[in-house]
Length: 239
Ligand SMILES: [Zn+2]
Image (cartoon, rainbow, N blue to C red; front, side, top):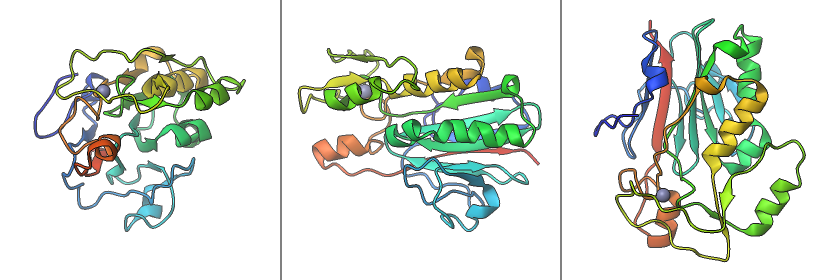
């Protein structure tokens, strides 16, 4: 992962594919004008690009690319997840917060791509800036509920807040007797469980709360009333 100040962090994995373009844009930057994105509801709905032209035409949290259109998601602390299929040169953008991730939005995106000709071994996934385990506190009860679900992979969390040596501002302060949950890890484990190859999944490990540009984090805004702006992430196949 390398940092470009104006265009957002890069994925080594996706940078290897000359047939696509993508960005994990910093907060507040406008999305490409022809981008398709849904009315996001933390759902598991994944639709095709043209169903979201004009943008927000339908409630969905994942968009599959069509006809070289950029497909996008907007996030604050949730995971922006970009998919690339080297078999059919397909792309997809998925908004996956905890609720959508637990609801199956990532698996639905994989299923749609497979139905359109991808193979599990040709799918590549980059998980962009999102709140990290350094700043994402959850109630213990929520984690207990997740641990009771036999369909979920092993969870990663810590009772002690992990120190983030790369933080550029103070990490989140504990608000409760909670635990520090690793949401990007859960997404990665779910993708592995679905059959995506480990070397085809990249987690950028940029925490929106303590590492990304200011205004990136919904939770930071909740704590400091500092304001926030959506960050758009998008991907498209080149014409
Ligand atoms: Zn953090």
